[in-house]
Image (tube, rainbow, N blue to C red; front, side, top):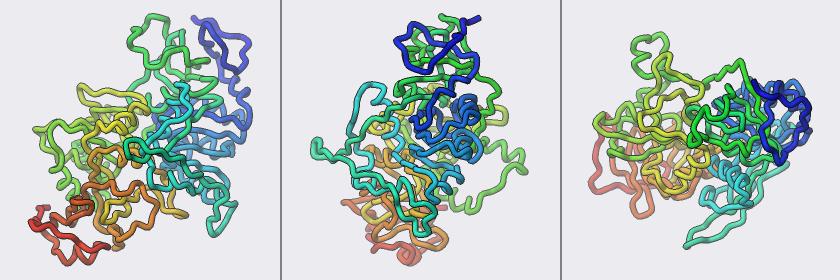
Length: 497
């Protein structure tokens, strides 16, 4: 049906047509030490066939740029386990425990970058912009430098071998910004749903994510697709990525399309209780979510972080409309799916299965964070490990013990939208409200409101003020379990649980 190239060399050409590959032997020409951009978000929208081909070839010392590094045994985790990766540049280490182990043992370089900054670094590269300025990471270790990229091999004291460098700072209209440089790839391997024979690409659901930006930021682009159709099969105004960016097409097969967190609508669990294992402290988490639901107003555009924030929709007034944004690239996120509705190409930023409401839209990662940084959201809801009275927040790393990555949290708290933190008041008896946060900050002074299972704090005149306590809680408990001196509102209220 299509003319297949018989002799291929892996380089970018001033081409008149995209080359359609009959196999993936071409990946043998990706040399050791290359910088490889890998599309996808978690396991959503990843080029499964090309990753497997790279494993077979065994190319070493790769620097991979991706939102995260797959799981222990899927996605980029396959190349990690095969000893092919030298450095991972990502926003989130995710649930890949092998990556964390190799990182802390000094066997792997891990460069963590805020998710929106990572997306913009790629978008900028594709647009020929060498650097840009952002508020994300201001006054944190992102600005100051010192984030461990590599530990010394098997160091018991976690001695740092390579650390991030301080950022260049500029002021615009009295506000501090960080200069970030574009990321260029030698090669990009991406995944789309369908391509035409000109290399024009279309995506399904939230599988678009980083694929679109990476297609534009590399010297050579190999796009893996599920179908290749003749020209004219889809309208010129239905193209997501123009074929000008694509050098090679490969028709993939045997997709797993795993969903990292398969979550169903609550009605599924009620009908099949044997499928539902109630999480520890779910009652506490639900009471936090129930109280937080009162902060939502009709017509709001809201971003929900992972964990407790995802429980809030179940407690919303059914007569109001909330437009939920997810960093992976969608506005209009709906309920969790019914059995049979789940799609590997449709997940949220927590890698949970989702549906989309009528009127929803999907887009690239860079556009998603353009929405964030541009201040277009009304409310951001996220969790925290530590908070102080000034509204400083830490929620992304415990040095030497836990590496998750900042994901989109730094972008979200710097966006200018209202920041609502929902969390349990204490963690295994330890205080989470502190006079001074001791973990690396996600943002300074960014928190506007905190709702816990015991209390509500609202920022007034630059500090968090206790405005409500739970009906089954007394003031002395809150005082004893809060690590800073309480400022109590004159009209302190009780909230029902």
